[in-house]
Image (cartoon, rainbow, N blue to C red; front, side):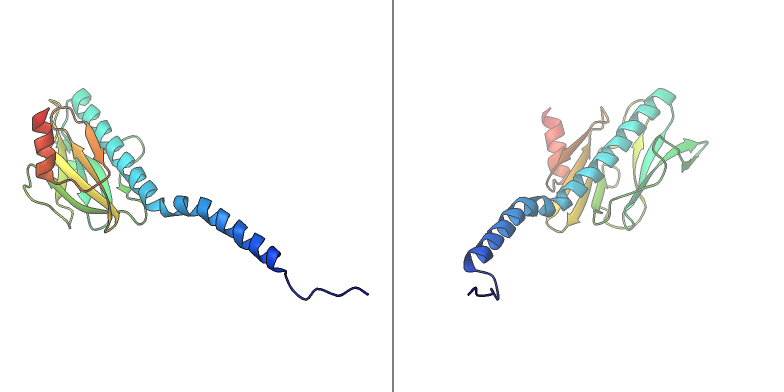
Length: 177
């Protein structure tokens, strides 16, 4: 006479728990890095825009600026026409938005001399001579995860740090080179 099984054996339960544990140990690190991936994506977008505006300013012999709305997480290029700035169309579109979950923490330029953490009155200027405002842009995915983007005023190159770097620390690094 054969007895019907009413449940799982201990060995079957242990195998299932082991397989779930193995799956989670592989999947969890990538799930936890989504903030880091969003920050990298956002920094790439801003750096690409800065490079593009630097090139356009030099080659077209025009004044450009990259404006920021810290509250909404938007940034957009503008070109000077006459004595006013107007929205500029560059490759890839005009107004851009940071990825969901990423925000501007603060932005500081040599011109502002202080951190600006709200509003839309901050920008980076690109001159036809190849000069760029020295600026530090802090973006974050949460209060513990920051990226710092730092523009070089002489070359327009932007250095990216995966931590919060103060403006004065960044200026000391430029002066040493």
